[in-house]
Amino acid sequence: MTELNKTTDADLLRYIVFQIIVKNVKEVHCLKLLTSLPLITSRIYTESKYATTAERKSVQNKVDTMIKSIKKNMKAMVLSMPWIKKDKRAYNALVKKFDKMRYEVAIEAVMLNNTWLDKYYKQIQFDDGDTFYDMRSKLLKFELYGKVRQLLYKQVDFEDDLTMANAKFMPILNKFVIYDGYLTAPNYHKKYLDSYNWGSVGFICAHEIGHSVDSNSITYNASGLYENFFRNSTEQELNKMTSCVVEEYDKIQVLPGNYTPNHVNGQLTLTENLADATGLEAAYRAFKDFTRKNPKEKRLRHPKLRGLTRDQLFFLGSVQFYCEKQADSFVEYMIENDPHSPNKARAEGTLPNVPALGKAFKCPVGSKYRPVKHCNVWTH
Ligand SMILES: [Zn+2]
Image (cartoon, rainbow, N blue to C red):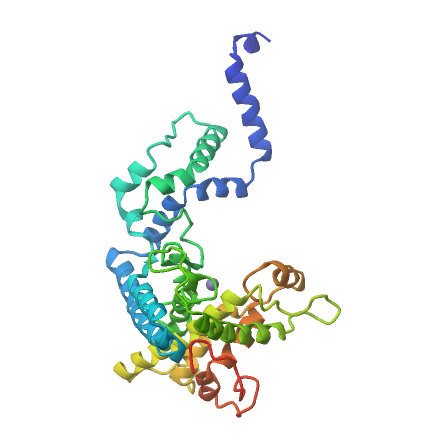
């Protein structure tokens, strides 16, 4: 009791909060605390992943080469459409959009700049005596002002954790980011054959670039502002192209018959499906440019894999990301809420629209992956 009388109310409160935290805080809460500083965790992750700056730069350069070629090929695909050629305003706007498109691979340059990071985080100071509760409160306050900060620091477009195996296109910035977390096995490895890396990493980059001309983002101009630069007749052609994809995905069943609905919602998933189709075709064309310049490649050592051609390896790499078991309950949630089609549908829907796939695996004409009729997404 004497001890209690000697203790200030503030210290008593700290002790009670500490006891609550000790009893309730789990590993997941500590992890959440860490991810509250995504720019820092991204920086630490990148530095620990690559032994040297040269190693990081070599991966970035490799991906950069893919991106440049894919962008060039996709731009050519889009501009070769007869109805785009006829619409001069749209044609010029799209040229500008592709030319001004920005991207970052693995890590944003600002995250590697210590002076910049110190300035960015100067409002947040942890002291030696801080409890978990104190730290959490400081972080919450910092997060609260996040949106305002993004406006002040115009060069930071987001505060994402780049350790995620992900990538994204931001139409209002005309920019995409390939997160470092994606550039790791089984998606990418410096020892993997180039053909496979082109399929897996090239396709994800191409998917993001493909978003720039999906049914939603195409309405944003090179500066990221909404602009309707299409003639009515061009819009009609665009709608014809996209409605084919809507109808195709509407038919894909992803759940057993006792579920309602059990098919993909083609309209909800349209932008993602378009990015997949545009992306895979553009990535493949860029890959063929690469193989022309680099005609020789080793074969895989495993006897059952040694026979795979470079085209087959490319396509195997491209569907690697879709290769996972998704529980029915998850798929049920996805088809009602997620703009991404379930992975099974992403593979079944995208591959038949890229004729090179059916040829690479010598599928009979008219079979599932080499249909006579398919959607032409920015192809003709
Ligand atoms: Zn996407």
